[in-house]
Image (cartoon, rainbow over all chains, first blue to last red; front, side):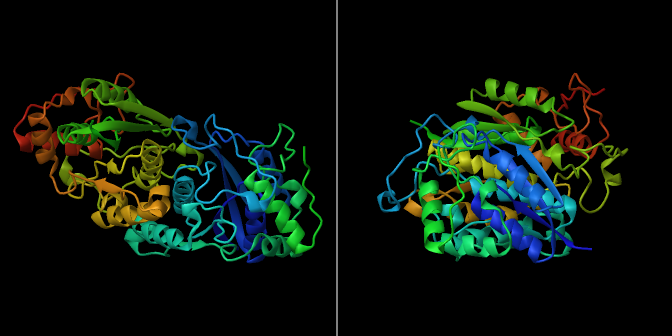
Length: 228
Length: 228
């Protein structure tokens, strides 16, 4: 029987690739997505499509309304910044950063891992094209793993320690796309845009669209994104 | 102006005492409670009463349905164990443990702290009468604090580090009750029971009721709990 793993699935390009990698590594993948009040909630439809097409073992969508405290262009009434090219991206931490999002999502993944008796958690963080998000850095991941190994029943009972898997962390967007293409990921099913229309068509000008588009260019692969 | 702090408020005896301590220490207290699918959701009414009576600066109730993965007598269809006395409590981690609950709640508190530009988070964990919960131990708290200090914008920008306050961690239940009584906490407003009836009356026989009742006895103070 395959070993169970919990995987954070957003519906974007990175986590779809991550799911394909976890499957290829032989895990029974239990995917977890969040309806957190994100303006791009159409990504949840993408997450469902990806989970079905990759035949993941299970897929849960957890309701957690982060609009209760806002603080991000993704969850509050703040415009998503638009730019003409990757060179125009702002320095520093962008307004699309959602406070403590990866900490929150990993915590809930940890709870599910405990219930499923899984000791492997996959998260598609990336330190190269990471847009300046603090909770995508390797040192954050290492610290969370250490915390997880003190937080749970398994930690007290001395059973299998929790391992965080971040196979994308050192890859460029182009490398991620090449890797996923090799594993048969259909990127037309994924949505990266922070500000898509209700049909899921991408704006083409937010940070996430620009990084994605450049990724396909650098990979020398056709970009299947449906733009507005 | 008072310094803002985020405080996890369950509606129980410990977190009510915690809130009184944070107020007495001069913080502007922003309380956070969770509707997580707990069977004892009447505790949220208690949390609202406590927040109002202590004149906390704000109180948010976040919806996060942990029944999506269950695994605990508090969130799944599993009976809450009952005993005749404190001596009968089971050894080890009880079935009322909710997987990764404190990790999840602290993560969301961290997000709110970031939005409010608060660097202080209060949690009423207790290592003495801790009922065997792994995420109430000092080593867990220290690890979470280290993670928090890598997770946020403040961590990257080098502004005030996050400090977790656990003033109850080394106190017995009797000490907590004496401390809160000195600060004017009205324990009749608090609910500790894991299995109260719909009016909030306590069962008197779950682990939490037994520890609470013994706490009042040991403190030599009248127990204002309304039992079924």
